[in-house]
Length: 254
Image (cartoon, rainbow, N blue to C red):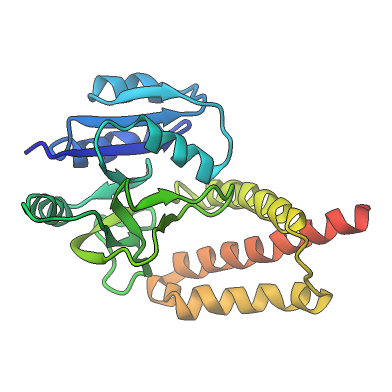
């Protein structure tokens, strides 16, 4: 069933993960847009082979890249997913049912995104999940222009409904890959904090690592994922500390 829906995905060097992502949404839309920022591993060719419309755009930051993706879409209803995410059958059916209603007015839909670790064939029952808006009408929603925070900003008073099913998020290729990714995030967030003139005390720098570890390991329930959960909680804590350390490094350099 092809809906009046456009799906857009931002990519760079995702050939090993993009296939399942595109396969999971191919029945939902005839307009699937991949915005690529310079892949060298065959991502663009794979996307075209699987039916996506590929457009190159130099990397401007997360929010601006997703805004660019929005602008390339042909339909008014938009679904954004990342190249390491898979839409489950239950979620696809829920999207079809929601957009098939004849009296549907512009609104937003939130859905659970559940993180999965390498080696997991299915989501853990207690895995951490977020519930952002990922399906929305372009009249009432647009991605924030923030270079580090990719979220949909909805017009005031826009109704938000909930979809059934989940997006499976396979963000970690390995612990080493995760650290490389988090180090890049730390640079962007340090720049963002510095540009905004945020004042962060030295005490926060000292406390950030243990508090972030507890947040990941306890509040985000990494402890139920065994040793891998402990290791990813340590990575998360180091990243949260590193972004503040890099922020302080910029200040001390001046």
